[in-house]
Image (cartoon, rainbow, N blue to C red):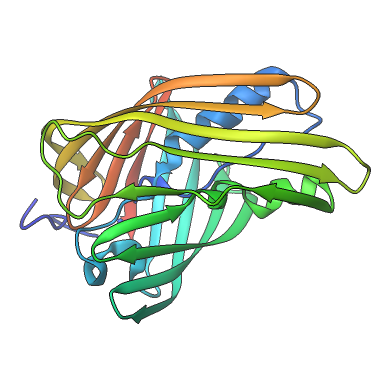
Amino acid sequence: MQGNKPVHTEKVVLAGFFLLPNFQNKLPDMKKVYFLFLLVIGFAGCSQQCGNYFCLQSNKTIEMTISNKKGKETGKLVYVISNVATKGNVTTGTVNSEFLDKNGKSVSKATNSIQCDNGNLMMDMKMFIPSAQMEQMGDISATGTASYLEYPSVLKEGDALKDASFSMDFKSASGLGGHVSIDMTNRKVQGKESVTTPAGTWDCYKITYHSKMIFKLGIGIPMNADVTEWYAPGFGVVKTDSGNGTTEITSIK
């Protein structure tokens, strides 16, 4: 990496796309869905100063490739950034997300927001619930807490980062009620490492945390994972590993 910019091209793990399980799926499929959630959480972090955040640059297209623990590609996430605006110290933008399966078929789309306040990136955790899954649930009424995943403007080895959590109760038009919650805890900066992906090479901070999701529809099903992500200051998370697979930046346009 040269000056915290990609050596040959430009591209976030980050968070951006949480797939709720299809109610017709069985438990094993729900675990696969949670695996996708862990792999794409990286899109949350993009840079140290608001004007440099890659996920806050209009008309940029970011492609991330998802692989299982055997290294086999299982899908892609494509993000298109739009509607970037700055007022005072706060910059906001729209993240248009699309999940493609291993054959390139579109599976789900979502439109969410992101903001940067004084160099601190703030990701609304409601964006982890995409429109496609909401459509599968039908017309619903829902209530949830406002919560954000934060990446501070300055990081150093040994830092303990803020935990993040989100919860939502919902009821479908058919009267079916449920609850979903997400907790990201014990976030810690472990050190610095160089990371290379098809999109470039970065000097990164290695961040670890524990993730727990409970999706309750009649019965609560907790899903836990210890996650590692590599965050490049001035750019964002370029790679994430959940133990069951990885997600990494492969293209930026």
